Each structure stands twice: as structure tokens, then as C-alpha cells.
Image (tube, rainbow, N blue to C red; front, side, top):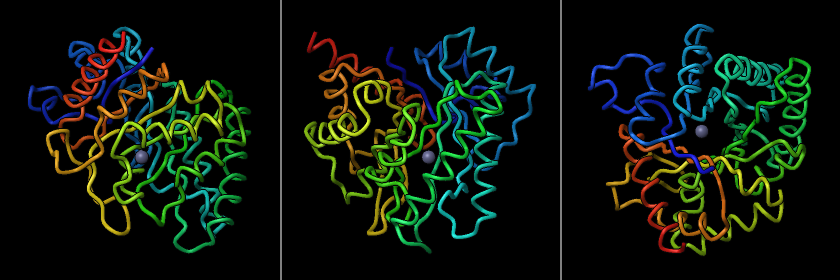
Length: 286
Ligand SMILES: [Zn+2]
């Protein structure tokens, strides 16, 4: 089943008088959405009670939950203490996911600004492997870790690097952030074929199952020579990429991804528009 939902809470959610994320599942379901990515990007500060409340409501309203792990994870830090800390942040996020019943966590892999890229990939593979082993020991084996394609050139997270990291364990599913890919490639996604080249690369490297069940982030994005600058909304049409182009490939390849919209402010509204674009595309081909 294909899933659509926002990353975090829309401005309109608060404007309508709602206050807490545990109210999100019902709000999203009433809009016609069925996924929600809870953000722990600034740290795992959520308490068990709130997490369980979100989880209970998500179950009741049919919302697929994922959690975004802290941004400051760096599996390729030259400092071993920081690599150790990174494992702990992953485990903390898995803990919160287990309270919430979230099925996936999205993880940034790190930076290459102070290190050699090859060393960074090898080191991150090791840290990720150790994190998986620790997760298994703690009973978190059923929560999928999803390393993310990142938007800045000096971040560890090109499509090739993420596919290589995901190759160490067949349970790892990549988070393909098409805005990030577009930014990193200086505006490289301009047609359905450009998207298909990416899905082909994923299928060749990780196989059909992982392509079909991909974790996806999508938003229009502004970039500079260093890559990602800022996420925009579907209305900001001066920035790419176009969701229509990807929708065609989802239908063509019969994919069932979880699609998380990362538009500024109106992420839930834009997720719904993306869902409608996809449905229009599926109908046209059906
Ligand atoms: Zn991210």
C-alpha cells in the first residue's frame, strides 16, 4: 500500500487550535493521509507517554509512523567518541520508535568535510553494522533503519554512498530524498526518465523488494554550488523537482513507497496534493 504524509506538523494544524503531535494521526486521517514522520531531528526528547499516545492514535486512524533521527549523527566522524555517540542516537531513536510503534527511522549518515570519502563510507558501514547488532540485542530488529540521501555535497550521502551503505544488510531501506538528489546534482531531475534512472540504480543494487518499499522524501528545493539551500512548497514552481515525473515512475514500476512531504509550513497540504497527483496518474494508466 502506498503511503503519503508530512514530515512534522503543518502551520495550519496549530492555527486550527491543535497543540500536540498526538492529535496529528486523527487530523491527518481526516485529511485523507496515511503516514506521519515524527521529527527528532534536534534530539530524542519525546517522553514515553507522548510517544505511546501518538502510537495508539496512529493505530486507530491507520497512520504509518516513522521517526527522523537527530541531524547531528555522524557515522564518519574522525573522532571515535562522536562515532560512539552516533550509535547511541540511533539506539535512542529506535527506543522512541518502539514506544510509538513506528516501523522506520530515517538516519543521516554524516559529513565528509574533514575526511576522505572512501574512508567515510567504510567507517560508516562499520558504525551502521554495529548499530544494527546492538538494535538486534535490544529487541528492535523489526524497526527498519533508513539511511538518507543528503543534499549537501560535503555530506556523506550521495545515491551511490547510500546504496553502498544499505548493501551491508538486506533489512536496510534507503530514504531517497529527491529534493536532495536534485540539489546535489545541480538540478538533475527534469523528466520521468531522470527519476527512472534513479529507481533502476536502486533496483540493480538492492533488488526489487527494497525499491518497491522505498522510503521517500519529496519537496521542491533551492540549491547553490554546495548543494541544498532551502526546502520550498509545491506552489514555488521556480524550483524543482516535479512530483508528476516521479508519480509516473511509481505507477510504471508498481511501487508502494512511503512518501513523506518536506515542504515548508504546508507539508500535510502538499502531501495530499502529491497523493492526488499520484492517483490521477494511476487512473490514467489503469
Ligand atoms: Zn533528513
